[in-house]
Length: 528
Image (cartoon, rainbow, N blue to C red; front, side):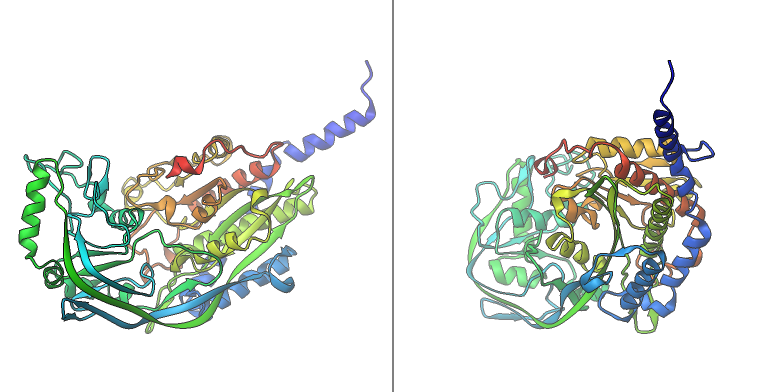
């Protein structure tokens, strides 16, 4: 039987598209374009003192945005920002503490001496009530709950630090001497209070002045808030109070209330009490409008161009303090540089007729260090319909090793977080990318909804997750230079960073080119 010449030509083109003229898979050819030299060049520029730590809204972040914009313009990548630019403006408001007062039963208390609170997690508010509810340790767990049977809706509640113990002296929740997440994860009690609809949570802390000195930068530094779209806090309004404030509020000594709570806990019960107390708290802020920029570069697909893959990395960092520059080489010049090189490889593929079938949005976001603000603004104001967005890949801190892997001298790894949440297809394709191409060790240590570090919830992909978009987060772990001025370009492991970038390119290639859109087979309810 003779095979038609047209069929032979079609098969030849198809094989060339998949494997290239040298019979290697064509994806490997373009992955090879991601080089250590180019990654290193980008990191050294972005993490230089000249860029002043790239703090959102300030000079260094603007310089970094311009660097990225010029790079994509030179590559010929289509802009997808405002008015033909690569920029999507992030409308922001800078806030710092103004008039902050706390009065309890005619006792006046001093901010930063008797109590404190964090600007990012504490909205401006005026709180008034004629009673407070003591809720023991402020725990709401299926094994033990201080909120069980207690009406705290729209009430000011007061809670102790720590957790209860049983008759044997073990922690009541774990049943051992190991602490539970209610001690290990500071967010737990704040989230529990929010879930129980309290007006405010007052948490007792030992030696408030010492705590203030330790966390002064986080308490007193100006914060940024997004002014576009809804941005409800995941936490209750929370203040940390001294023993003196506690005793003024409840009219009893701290030790007495601790003893009552401990005695109840030994019986498997909780001790709560509603107390008449005239409380007036003012948390006022001085505000000033400002803005940051997301940088959006677009690679149009072919036959499936109406579907979109988002690949993102934040390019901002924490700025400088006095003359000390926090360069942020790993956090996150590393992820930013990987994203730039991944984009370049896709552009080269497109120029040679092997462009992606689906469109790809190269999304450099800002405001991550201020609370995932740039990615939040994007999902509030997407440039493409979110229902057409098939997945989000997030790259953050992929240039170093954490102590656990450094001790083993094992740099050929990457932490994978979230790949099997929402879509098992995404997880399988990521596994295939490692097995078939990158040979990276995929470490799932932090891939848990119950991970005390909460990494799944703490980076930009999670804003996409909340919109029901399958997402995966690539990360190599914290190290001693995290958020320090010592996070510099000379400490990056460029070869291993290149390997991570190539792995992400392999995964992106599969997501962009497979026949079927990846399926969603989990719901958001499964993640709560």
